[in-house]
Structures are given as structure tokens and as C-alpha cells.
Length: 145
Length: 145
DNA sequence: TATTGTTATACTCTATAACTATA
DNA sequence: TATAGTTATAGAGTATAACAATA
Image 1 (tube, rainbow over the protein chains, first blue to last red):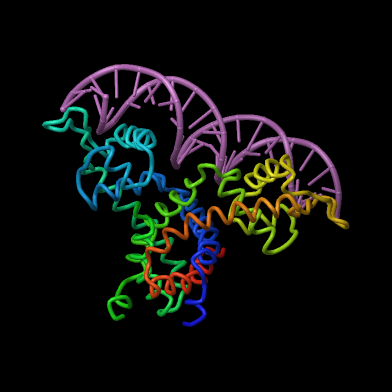
Image 2 (cartoon, chains in turn cyan, green, orange, brown):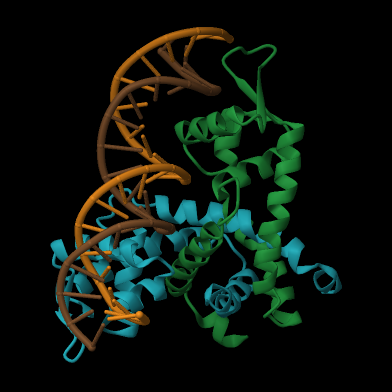
């Protein structure tokens, strides 16, 4: 792939930015008949994946500012999808945990969203799917702060 | 990459969704000292890349609904970054074109954003960069409607 | 004083529904 | 009637600044 290696990071950046934006719009918008937004789903998924954590840690993990996470958590807590506790030794911290109803909703929302995205993924070849899977850790690394 | 081919599209979907969201947040947010938002930059970039087109075509291209594009275009037109003309034979259509000042701003904004994203890209290996470059057309295909 | 989180506020992003003008 | 685009409206998403409680 000699063409690839000749490409500069700046050129790659120019190619990557618009496609990320459009793809995320598509994924975010596929919420007809969904009962949580993509932002909420992602916060719940992080709580499931990494376990209970403070509000601030969750904000960092989700790459948003603390006040943004406060709002998301208020909505989720209102619906009983997450629960909060005071940290045992530092009472400033709010420890957030996903509840049983939260896990159940996460599961069902995730599978209907997966079904939708999978239909799009199925238009790709096996090689393209494999390439996409192997790029996920690279994207994760890029998204790290 | 046998592990890759064993992965189902649904599992891939579950991996892809959160990282797309976080990465786009990061890219969108890197606008301290930027004079156009990511949404505006992307619309201008499409006009530069594909040339003049109708407002509706631009909305489709950007994967947004027509009223959303109306708002973006109003802001850009106010600042003289795009210009509109009536279609010569169908007076319902608004043909949108990027202006000279728009092109100049696109260039400068793009390069400061590229500089920022490039610094992140530079933490990747040559192989990772090559993989990322070769995945761009796959992401484009996925974002198609 | 420093840190954690919230409240107050404001702007961006985006959609759906209803409308206008033109075809 | 159908289509292109806009206006009206609303909600989601997110930030910065200022604040309260706790360390």
C-alpha cells in the first residue's frame, strides 16, 4: 500500500473529519422508535463495560465536560436507569451505577440499533468488515485524551 | 485475520458506535479559536469538493434534513462565505456556491484543524496510518444512503 | 485552597410540521 | 398535485462561568 504511506497525516485528517461527521449523524439519527438517545446509550454502555464510577470519571470517559454529564445523568436517574451513591470516604463524589432496568433497556436498545447498523454493514465485503474491525482499536487510540 | 472474520456484523456495530461518537465529539470540540463550526466547515468543504449544487442536494450530501441545511446556509451567507443563485430553469431551486472569502476561510480553518488532528495521528504507527487511510472509502460507503 | 459536582445560561445542531412559491 | 425550500417550533447536545459542598 505505497500510496497510503505517501499520504501525510494532514491529508488523512482532511479525509477523516467529514466522513466521521456524516457517519455519526446517520447513527445518531437512527433513533426513530428508540427510547434513549445515542448520548444516553453510550453513557449507559460505559457504565456497563467499566462498572460503577464517579460522575467526573464518566464525563472524562465519554469525552464531555462535567456539566454535560450532569444533565445526561439527571435524565437517566429520573427514569431509574442509573442510580447514584455518595462515595464512602469522599462525600463530594457521586458514584454512578447502572440499574437492573438500565441493563435491560441497554440490551434491547443496543440490539435494535445493532440490527439497523448491521444491515448497513452487510453491504460490505468480508475483507472490508475485517478491515473495519481491525481499525476499531486505532480509532479508540485516537479518541484517547 | 481469522478472529476478524468470525466477528458478526452486530458485534462490530456495538464496537463501532461508541468510538465514532467519542471521536466525533473530540473533533467537533476542537474549535477553540475556530471561526466556523464543524458543521459549517463540512458544508463548505462539500461545496468546494463537488462544486455548486442545490440546497437540497447539499442537505442530502451532508446527511441532514433540508431545514437544517437552510439554517447552516443562512449563517454562511450572512458572513459572505457562500452565495446563492436561482436555478436558471427551475426557480424553486437555490443553487449554492462557495465564494472566494469562503474558500480562503475553508483553507485556513482546515489547516489549523488538520494541524490539531495530525498531532494525534502522529502517535500512530505507519501501519496504523495506512490502515486508517484505507478504511476511509469503507466509512464513506457506510455513510451512503 | 483545591477539587467535585451542580446550577445558570447560552449557543449549536438537528428534527418534524406547516407553509410558500414554483413546476 | 408534486417538489424545493423556508419558517416555526422544539428538543437534544454541549460548553463556559459561577457556585456550593467537601477535602
